[in-house]
Length: 511
Image 1 (spheres, helix red, strand yellow):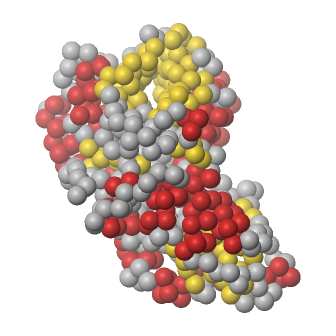
Image 2 (cartoon, rainbow, N blue to C red; image 1 turned 180 degrees about the vertical axis):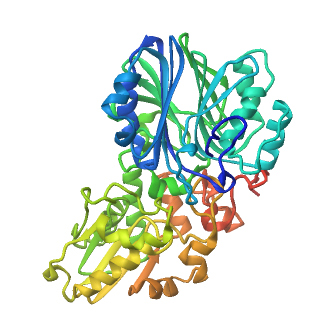
């Protein structure tokens, strides 16, 4: 999902690249200075991508862009901001989470292309298109050129948009999106207009609202909170919205119900971000991801109670709410005996996302996470550790080993996401089941526990996870148990191997 250097030189190795990122866009009715607001809002999605950042804005002098490697602070220094802080109609920001080991600067977004009439197009993307071969063929036919087999999906999409037919850019954007499949949330800038787009299943999140009288779109609701903005709704699945000096206009209506990635719920999204209700009703009725994870903990307490435990500990940050819910349900003491060290070089990193060198992740665990070395806490204790998921087993293995060294008698893990068995081709950094711990153990929790050195590993069930998402809403129980996620508005392909859309773009229909 990474842009090429130019229309003639797509990045190398991009064929194997996919990412899950944070995107923010702000559109003004008049030219105004909105960069500071946009950058502050982007901090609300910074956790979704720390390897790179970039922006594009439309000023009186046309399109301006800037990109760099690192976090927002690394890229947008005071000197850079002072040069870019000019009146604009819109600004878009991309926080990049790239995968598959390729982190060079040529892979940063926004992706830029020029139409045949010379108009510049800017695109930021969260997710991954599927049917890349078909996407490439369509772009080549329209542009009458050949692209390297390594061309990324976002690069190809931008080229497709630059050449697609239509009387207006409104028509062109809708026509282009209708030709594409996969998991994608997009912000597209053309002239003084900004477009917000979501795929036909709504797999990647995208929200719309206002901040300081300007329209705003972002990957998570916390971005609005950062600037005292107000979320007005979720961009519906398959929806295309236009934000222009004339206001907001829906170009293509979508469905309020979606198939949002279930790993978003367990891990990626901030605990203080909200997600829409099952029927897409007023945002005042929405729930937070933190509350959802706490409910998962309560479900786990019902399904996998370790009632003889001395205390429960949550692994920062996504595992804390889970562990709190578990402890409360079983009336067990809760201790925050594992601390996230924000001053460590890896303290701000999410280790699952730092897969540029997977073999080095284990060595970073005990830098980011500090286990309180007070042996009086751990000595002879039966400990329950709660975490959002077990993916490769790096974190759980290191923490288990250390806590036993501090004198614990038993270490039991509770996990707020079902057993990860399959790769993801819809935007999450799980390239193959070979890098996951569970498939190597045939999904056997006892074998996984032995591998990480724990007394036991206890996963939430598929049903328990789905029940925790929408309290009070009746869960659909399909005949095929593997349909439990898609039948209830989610995507749990990494658990069941059943995805809303296949690699070649074929839609799945519930049976």
